[in-house]
Image 1 (cartoon, rainbow, N blue to C red):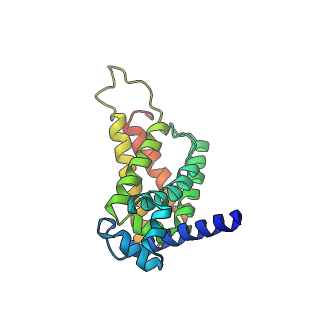
Image 2 (cartoon, rainbow, N blue to C red):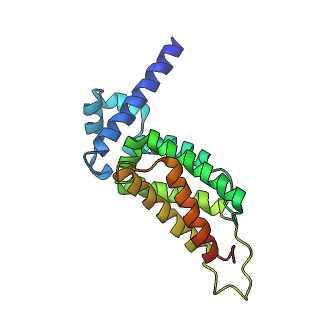
Image 3 (cartoon, rainbow, N blue to C red):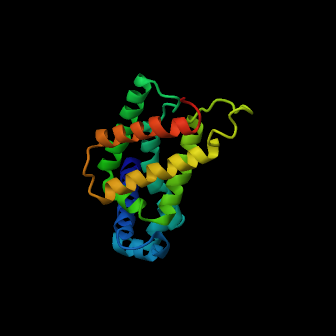
Amino acid sequence: MRKHQDIRARFTRKLLQETLIALLAEKRFEMITVGEIAERAMVNRATFYRHYQDKYALGNSLFQEAIDQLTCDLRSPLKSPSASEVEGATLLLAASFTHIAEYSSLYRVMVRNVWFTAKMYDTLAELLGKRLHLPPRSSQNALERMPEELAVASLTNWLISMIRWWLENGMPYPPQQMALWCTTFVSSGLFQAIGILN
């Protein structure tokens, strides 16, 4: 009996998440109500509230599942890339773009909604901030090198823009090509700007 309840609960949560994705394709997250979600999912409000406190809890669970997998693909630290490290970063990013392609309907609505984009920005900025290991600033190069916070903000915004462009244009290039362009851009531009490469 307990196993049947667990399966049913998982099914209901999945149904509510898919319903939210469908509604996000039609309108902004801020405009969606719990009543609309319940009605579209063909469940009553009590069922919704049995699984989620509010629409933000539902949105957070949807976002967290997607971003957990994405961040899992980006575990390796970013540092001054040698040829082998660029290859490693390309493989990691290719896995990330492959994941995004697999869940493209979700990511497509996420990057079009301000609430989700803000959450994605915060998560990626935190992840990149931990992974971007910069050498200590010396008084000699302090003015020449981009501040770490600016580097993280720039890279985060740029990566979200790349993902958005790729999704909104129907993913015209394979994940491996997108990953290669990302690492090429970052290794030739960002790492020089922040003073890791000469």
